Length: 184
Image (cartoon, rainbow, N blue to C red):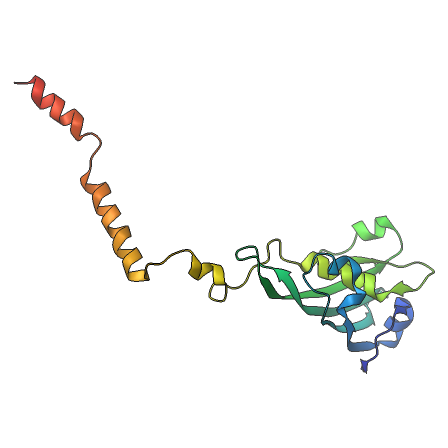
């Protein structure tokens, strides 16, 4: 396993035949498209990759890519640290037909004569792993405590009172009164 320096471009066939493994990190600011949706471009992306050949001699890339990203919390509009992890299970393909015929648990990795660039490949996986809506955990979000001035006990008592009133007030009681008025 090679720890530290990750290749900028790579030949998936060669690395798979050699059974190479890489582990390291990249500066978050290198991921331009991803940074556009963040509040800050500071940080790093941790990468772990393993290249190998399948039994039917196909190129396989497995690994994980993870980062703590600074995104805007949609509850309080403050910056939240969101942990994003993407698991990679890619199989090398040359054509769209091969990509459509892949087993369900693999995603296609298009290979041509040119080497594959690492950052765009990882960036795509991170973009797909982003949450639809970013927010702090409820216990950490300042917005959760700023909506009310009453305690939980007071809120529970009020909810019970409203429920009691709903049970005791019957909208059909007026009809019952009318019925007794006409029978006299």
